[in-house]
Image (cartoon, rainbow, N blue to C red; front, side):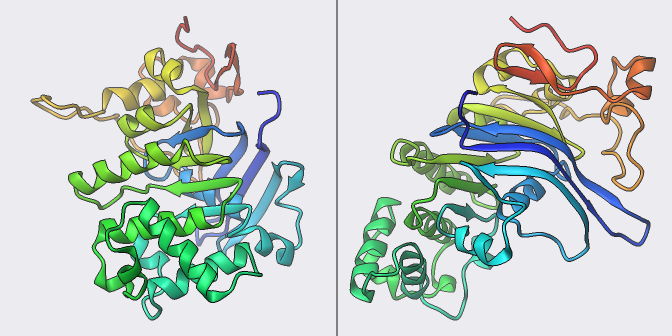
Length: 324
């Protein structure tokens, strides 16, 4: 990737626990292209949301160590003073959080919260101008009667409408980088389909880049240009989404694909044997070796590097699968 919008190098995060330091992220190397959508997938506990939090520098109170660099178009986010980093949140970087109810303040109307976002991005706006922008953005995300919704409180809206409001608020910031953390979690199938269609439509209008965190490989295949597969706080495979899903190189990626549920599937659900590694006592070699059916002695002794395996493709495996 010649000139990525975001360049992550050696990102490592550990946290204090009663049992000792826990490795949350380990030596993350990742590029996010300009104007592209990157899908980040992996099991629960793989580090996806922790990665997004690091990009916003919303760090846990028990943080013990944070190392590496996160370069956003020439600005290292990890070395910025907190006031300068706070100024980037809601302007150059915006986020759609998993739970729209917790992301919205229950004691303020939708209009008040959206006016605050609009004025943060453009301090010179009058309240009337900010309300007009908010109404237009609610209409853009297909909320019916947007003017009336501005006067509503979050609890007066359905889950799907709250999620649309959160997306609208993020888009009001006109960010260079939009982070969407499980934007369809806890939504019913009909509303999920509407949000997917909305994101697919919005991608044509966003000048910046999007990071979409999801468990759903079908959603990622539909929306994302590039794919990042995470496991136990590490990146195990990256590349163009279509290429990775068509010919996964890492055994963990292949295992995730085998567990996908498709229409018409019958019988026993597939699963990955074993358990996710303990972050307090990580494996000595490859993090996936204890669950990998093809692991060899080298895999248990030597951690593999994330390396080029084909043009635009990288995998952290001593014995990656064949890539066309």
